[in-house]
Length: 177
View 1 (cartoon, rainbow, N blue to C red):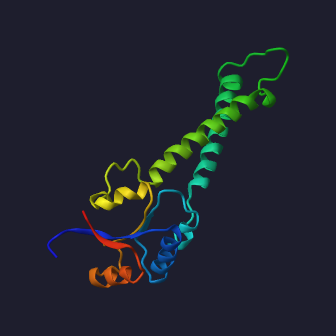
View 2 (cartoon, rainbow, N blue to C red):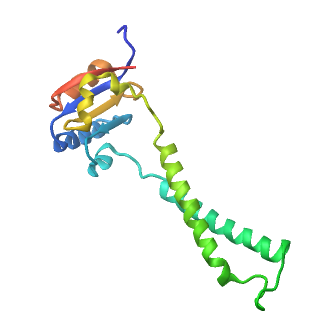
View 3 (cartoon, rainbow, N blue to C red):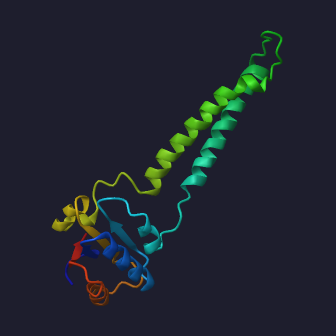
C-alpha cells in the first residue's frame, strides 16, 4: 500500500445496525474504534466497550477545592490578616462563610467540568482524518459510521476490511491520514 491509512470506516443506515456492528467489533477484539451518529446513542458506549469517564470524580475534586479555597480565603482574611469584631460575632463565623464557600464550590466545579470535558475529549480538534471521506458529511444528518483505526493491535488491512464487510454495512471506506 502506498497511501497512509488512518483506518477503515463503515457506513450504516440505521442506529440498530450500527450498534449491532459495534458489538460484533468489540467481540472480535478491536479496541481502537469510534462511532459517529447524527444523534446520541446511549447504548453505543456499552457496545464499543468504552470505559466510564473519570470526569465526575474530577468535578467532585474541583468542587471540594472550591469549598476549601472559599473557607481558607475567608479564614485568612477574617481571622489572620484583618480580624475585626462586627456586631459581636467571633472572627471565625461559619454561618457567614457559607454563601461564598457555596459559590466557589459551584464555580470551581463548573470550570473543572468544562475544561475537563474538553481535555478528556481531545478538543478542540478542528481536523479528523474521517473528514477525508466525502460521505462522512452525512454523519450529521442521516447516516451512522463506525471506524476501526489502523493503530489497533489487531488491525490487518485485508482481514479487517473483510470483517467489516461481513457486518453488512452500506459501504466500507479507506480513511487516509
